[in-house]
Amino acid sequence: MGNKFEAKERYLFNHWNGKTSVRSQKYRLDDKNRLYDITVDRAQKNDISNKNQNLVNKFLEAKRKWENETITTTKQNDDRAFTLGYPKAIYTQLPARDGDAHGTIERSNRWPNDSFFTNWNSVNDSITWNVDVLEEGNFQVEMYYTCPPKDLGSVVELSFGDSKIKAKITEAFDSPLVGKEHDRVLRMESYVKEFKPLNLGIITLPKGKGTLTLKALEIPNKEVADFRLLQFKKVD
Image 1: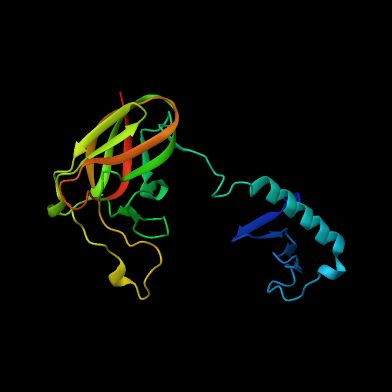
Image 2: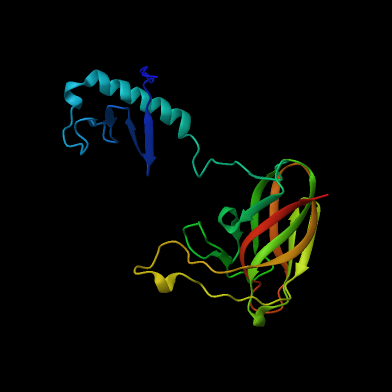
């Protein structure tokens, strides 16, 4: 009790929209390389970089090192797969947020969180995920959807390599979007609604990377359904 604890100096990095700032316990270097003593200048009005060039250089070196180690993955070169079937987990979800739509299928909103896929109206359309199955196994799969009575009857197929399962949409479920009636200002993100699970069956997935594909084999009416997510449950 009563002993002083001396913490090692450390840096905290903030990166947003291509801009990086760095701070320590005492100083902050902003994205324009202006230096502030935040212990006495919390509003950051007094730029002291001209009087502390050695300190600025120290922060700049830390920033360059952090950016070189951290900001190397971009949307264009990020080929990491979504993991599926973690050995110690029973459930895995693959939402529309993480999928790629092909053909006429559209995302409900350009912002992926809470979004779903709609305008699914062709057997040439598909939704795909780049996945890495961590352990071979059998999985019970549910597809969460909405479909009005007039569009019932489509047959959907889920495939991964040679493994395939399919099911027919026979129950209508057409819920409204919610949240808009409570907003003073229309939100940028997608409004949400309830979705119903459809049992697609049990699929056997081999260990390894590949493309998981959801598509329609038959579309007797105008559209297949709106799609929210796939849920995988590991079974014996």
